[in-house]
Amino acid sequence: MLILKAYKYRIYPTLEQQHYFANVFGCVRFIYNKMLADKIGHYKQTGKMLKNTPAVYKKAFPWLKTVDSLALANAQLQLENAYNQFFRNKNVGFPTSKAKKRTTTASQQTIKTERSRFKMEG
Image 1 (spheres, one colour):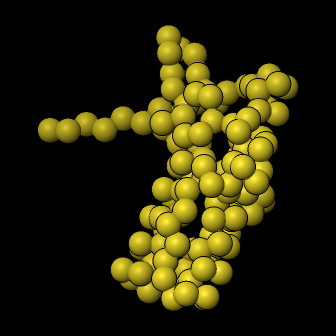
Image 2 (image 1 turned 135 degrees about the vertical axis):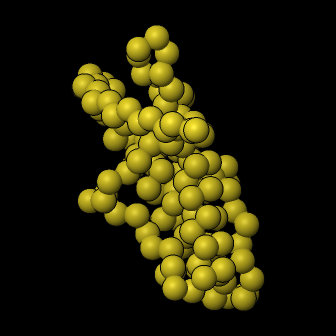
């Protein structure tokens, strides 16, 4: 018999950590929205799906280099997943842009626990 457990944590980041989290979440939101807009524009022009990565945007927007690349890669994966779900099932709805007002979740791959401490990769 498989028993699943869930743990809920509340963290109290320092002011510096709060700024870092806000920066990461803002960059993730920006890259998601930018990639979505470029995919839509490319599809309207050519009728084909655009395969883009966050690395392409780092030259035009150097401030993206200051955040964890895994966080940006996760934004790409989330966008690709949303696109694939839409094309498989039209009832799901077309991917929408991320807004600052909605909650942003952190990925399991970028936040880890070590000896009862949280560690943010990056």
